[in-house]
Length: 262
Image (cartoon, rainbow, N blue to C red; front, side, top):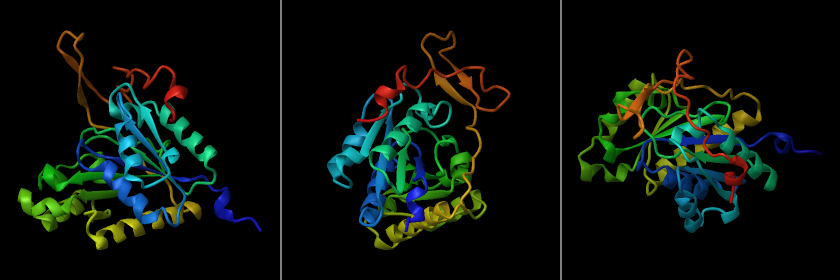
């Protein structure tokens, strides 16, 4: 008898958030919590390096071959929303090489509060904030904070040292998200890690049953791109449909197949 789960494509989970919020350590936490029962692969994104992939390999959370790096060669959000080719190839290669996989985690390069994944790349997405970034960040909103499938308020163990009221930050986040799920997480807190584990398993079950529909959090807000060759030092870029080709991004890499995996 064929196990029906074997014929379902792996659940692809995107992990986005600003620089330094702990995206790589969050992925390591998910792997430690679930690698004993799920078959997991990881894809990291950096502009010019594979540093996040090397961090995860050194942490020993998965076999090193299951952790691959994409070097975007451009703004971090380019390869997760504008032109997903390199990441899509990497995910497909990873799933083919280690078939069957249950979950592929795709980490965005560190970006700002507006970064979101294309639903053509991931089935669900987590957005990561951390208490060291300030207790007021959660209520500032934006598509990632407001409409990602899950918001993580990370590094709660640091709250006493940075003067952040975690329950208030979570309350602000819930209000900004109209009640969508929020987890206050510390990798040293077993209860919060268990909540994260349960959420991933819940989404995976819905994916396998065909009940989960990928949602688009919406286009990134207009944002400034520095450009030394531009007469004003850069330009404002918009991702809405009316202006989506006004300032096209370069392809994330001229030879996507050469950076899809290591």
